[in-house]
Image (cartoon, rainbow, N blue to C red; front, side, top):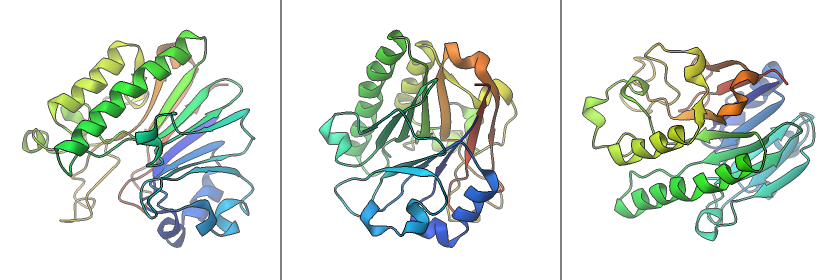
Length: 254
């Protein structure tokens, strides 16, 4: 079973850059996108359904901002928009789908770079999400949490760690949140298969960063530890263009 996650930085812009061709060629069982930047009623049928996937959308109140969508070959057993926490759900950040063997959380985690208020909002999001997914695992469910986590966890996960120690996305207080997830049994699937440096999923549009591979790895598939034996592969597809992020993937033996 192939799962792909991709922050497309605007679904309508991504379609103009070949998103639908990518979907057709890759044929994932499930594709999660973040930063759709659109409400469903703004989208054409070629984006919503003509490709043959079932699509589910969660958008924020503010148009042209945030938003997530999940494309599924097989209809999920259950769909939930949001976490049930208004301050996050108003921004369209979470889409939960239940599948035969797991729950899938497609999440666009907040970015904390604007100011202290948004940084605290981001930290609160990490704190509030963790008990929700832990409870699902404790109830006997396998859980996958994917999307744009907006934090590079370790120095290996960005090209210039020393220069960015005070930049939101690599601040110790943010990285500690991911440490807590790991300490409570959540596993970064990419690192199950890859220990090498210089593998990134996001590059600023400025300074020719992508061409020089001055990037950050901030897009992840995290799973509860009981799912590790089901993982066949996880990877980053840096050669796929169309956004400032590239797709990341997880292949499961299910």
